[in-house]
Image (cartoon, rainbow, N blue to C red; front, side, top):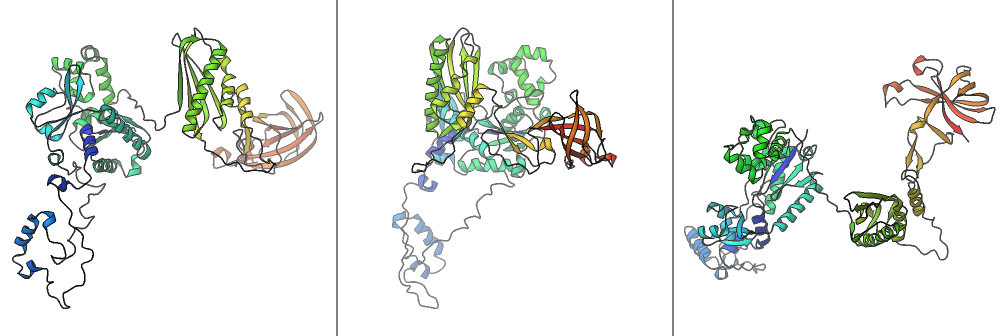
Length: 602
């Protein structure tokens, strides 16, 4: 069941500026004018109060009576900070303070999520709007809550806004900085919340929460924690979770709640009363809907698709189906790592092998510099050639070990130039390191004339891979299994095998056991005397066995009683084979007594 969350940041641009310009000192010091912190009296000296009680000499206001306590304290608070009496003169060293954790809100739990407690009027001083140049006019792109209370709205002309509000703080919008902040938030989401996160427009994110919310205690708790996290950063947000991205987007912006959870399959009923703008329609489609009297999403449900597409466009029909879950809407995930990539655009198309190799050499040099700067080594490289007619050609290479040796990479790419069909000519070439690994500097020990290190066979493996199929060079290693065909697996050419069991096994193991016919054998523990394999009859002159192997009952029920008896036999022509019989020759459940060839010795 797909679950998608839409995170909406309505005041992203304004709050990002507020976060950058937020003063480091407490808010009271900013709003009440300059104040000076009273000096801390860490050494008040010897106490002059005798044991058994009594007032200290400096506490005159307390000696006059308890009734005068509050008026005198109010007079002291009215004095400037630098004229107030010190703690020693007031008869105490410190003030009473609240418990540091008593008033701190929890990161999760019940209660409504509110905006930060910092007052907009006190922090900004006056209403603030952001404007951007559109054609010949300045348009308001964002407004703070104070400006919204005064009637200013995004999309309004800046001149009109200045006429309505005299003391208006007008600033230029920074959409690139806002998008960069959203990208950073998406990368944080990929690293901490969900593997799939995508930027949604200019004011939000999409989070694919399918199968991840149980790690945070459920969807409700995850939403609370996310909003508390953004609140500590100084951002106001709302979040909605639904079965489709379109429904989550509409609920987060038009649901009217900070957290909205919608069960999958309820999108049609939940979106019925929302305006058409919740479907992310184009302005032309919204204007056309207004002309036809369509205001809510529910007005589109009974309409036939043909007239609806003719009036509002195919995009409107697609958005409606995506929000209701009829048509899938894929999310473009944020990739945390940008693969190293270099490109060459040619002044004239090229088509000869010499010219293509020369461009490849230049691309490799540029890519190696980029890999060195990022301390990376290449494992897979992809070369794309753009042809004049719009088609493209692709070749790829892989290395057995991470490397950034330019000579080696150039040789491997040059070996595959013959696979490129230049056609009418190549006008652009791109080299991308699709797979990389960390490659740092290694310390080489001095051998004093003796070099006992084994030679590096990685370049040889790469050369062989370039001449044959990429997956042909491999090694075999043992695997924990009693069944022979499962006890051997392929590994990389440079991987270290785990070792081999002491049981004698044939050099060549057939991929699948092949049946034998015309088998003559003395039951139950003797090898066969003659058999026919692949149409040729064999007469056995010597044999050894049996080696009994039981089936792996934990894998399937068919292997619960399965038994194989293996024999090593030698034929008259000198061939040595490894064959087995199904069943132990006593119990029918162990096998049907059929014979199979499984391997060849020598």
